[in-house]
Figure 1 (cartoon, rainbow, N blue to C red):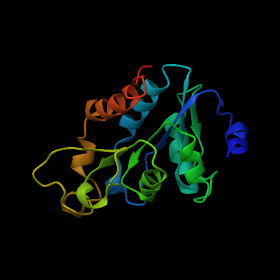
Figure 2: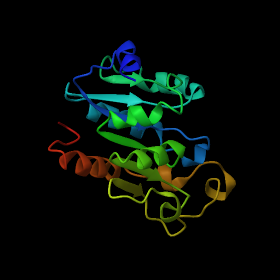
Figure 3: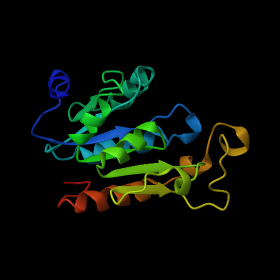
Figure 4: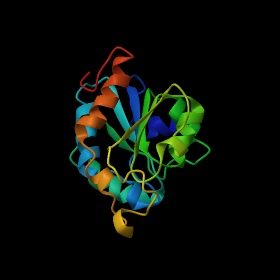
Length: 183
């Protein structure tokens, strides 16, 4: 894994935060603007790197998202196998992602993780360990367990999930290690 990180230019001396913003199902995804803002805040200090993972089919979307970043953000989508993901997660400080299989791998590895939940139930699907935090918008219809609002493939509970709620969870986790989103 260190060879892959070195080849991709991820500095070994930085603290890695792993992001997994996409799902096989778009109705489980948070808006891209939120991820971009989170990346911007996370890399304010050179001691931190953001590594984004996903499938090969996510690579182009991630490339567009990280285009404004000159340093500190690395696109590993499609560059690691599912078997290598646990080792990558084990080298990181924090995992932040959506309700997905990778979230479960992070939970199994036992690293601090934050998962953004929309229409699916975090009570049913979130990892159950002391290292896991769930962020979800409180709405009377949530969890609806539907493929987006009225079958639209768009979930208002994720589209309207505030950046501040996500930032609060990330800050709380990073502060437990003596840092925050800003440092």
